[in-house]
Image (cartoon, rainbow, N blue to C red; front, side):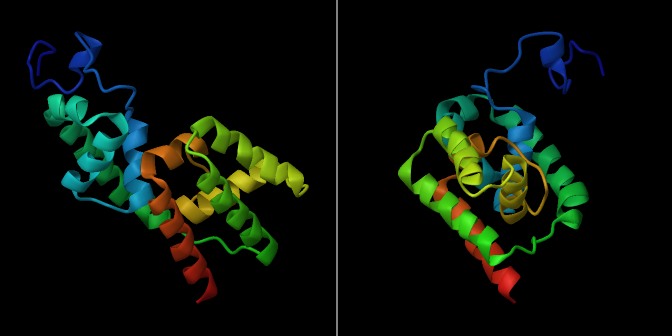
Length: 171
């Protein structure tokens, strides 16, 4: 397939890149992982809320192609390795403080900074607290910037992920 072909999947390297308002492929993978959703229509709705419905609709064929690839990546590489962390009661208390933090603000940078503040206030290395949060939210030791992730996924979904992880940990 030639780069001049409109169906060429990497056309933006050779021509205009679609205006996705800062949306990256990694954002799509993180979204699929966070909400454990593989329905492209549901995912398009999430992306539209975060990056603008008009922008997503204007680039829908391209975005759907990215979604398809992200869903396959999620099913092949992320889902098989997902696990619920085993946390102490003290660590769960920090997760509860994180929940309180996201109730106080919608600002991604304030959330990001707040996670550092919570960890330091309890004598924990911030890296360890991020690992705890990623374990609870994504079933992994690492993930995206937590502030931006919360704004992408939404507070309701974050609370639901925490509740689900807590229930799994107690069973």
